[in-house]
Image (cartoon, rainbow, N blue to C red; front, side, top):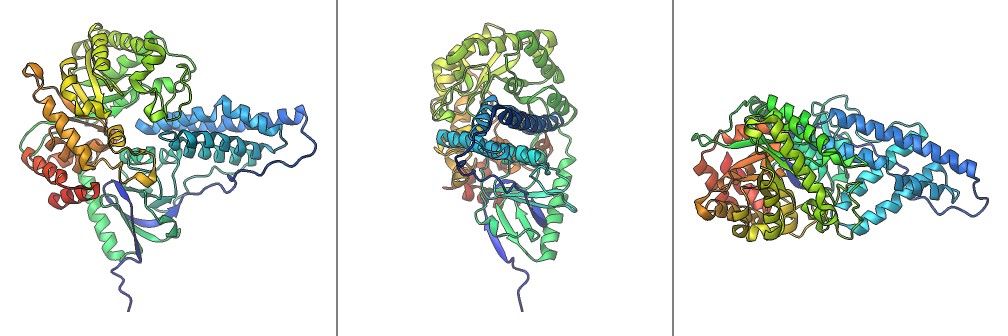
Length: 570
């Protein structure tokens, strides 16, 4: 007799959103025509009229796809809106359209020209490496949508669910992830991708149990029953139905109870926690204010710039910033200056393509191209603070990608000259290892765990092959966070400098407890993660958080650190 209590097979990956999900597996519907076309055969070349007709068809199809993405962005929040807006910009890219025309002149059909042009750009991005690799998925996804539009076919992507189930994909495009229906998609498993990829970030925002870098996932057939454990990073195929259903239901009850948490954030011993929201615009700030957020720990300003052919004026920026600050007139709001560059280029900043964009001109380094970009942001933020007044009269503002003491001191001086409260992000290892030299110049620190992990582990955060290295549970990264927090607690002049975490690590309820145990004073997460993190904190004292932190630091791998904390969490 077959032992049905054991799953038919089990697949291991990297868990990025804790929780259990049990249901029927459904594979993402992908286009079947994206292989690079063969070189066009010699013969009669198309005339100008034929090329013009092909160009017009491509332009109309690309515009339709861009408009759909923009409409979804308008309805989305957080990183979902950011990703969809950026992808709409890719669909409108003039360089792509020009390359399509060149391929049309070779005698290709408009569909073939679209694919060939896409592969030209994909090869460029692969050669560039680093965070540009994520854009290859975006490009091919947009190409598939345009080709489908040209052929009058439905858009490729997520299949229609007739009942809630688990979505499987080899590499899910961010545009698909951003449109997930959390009521129908119980869990998400990706064969590729890493813990800080856009897919993982958006899954956290939606609160969907998620596993990435699940090697061998293609062996799971569409329609199989699977149990996803987003905490352990495992996928059981055809497990015992009764046991799996019971486990998933129990987990769902725990998460539903957590979702009813209303704050304020505090540990079981009454120790208060600054639990803040990550937002990208005024609408997101208003939603956070209507929910459980005690303030904003990360206001991403670059979204207002990404789809602009020209820089917004100081007055336009001030109006936008004032709406965000005004959502929390009596609470902390931390604004990040432009984190542009790498996978978020600014059309008007003159940013050139780079061999290694993750290590290139990004963040505060836009000063090298146009120092006025950041200065005008600071002017606008100061004006916004004056308009809102009260607690926002001296807005908190931080710079990304600070690497030297001179950069920190210069940024702080520019802020104070405008009446702003200066801080810096800790995401470059040079800051973390020498943080005592930076502390005299700033009033607060915010740790960006996504990039800090990437740079500490020398591993591309978008590489699925390196997902285990870019896991924020890496003990080396946790040790650096502890050293930063300890140094900030004994800053020069007897000061205690606040240290927050605004990277994705803070959205993991178990890791959030560890971060507090390491000495972090505030956590900033996607709005959807607030109740889950807040509820987890209520079950731990500060001393217990410190014990969990010690257990994690006593491990040699991210997997062991996570397992050690989970074992002590009950």
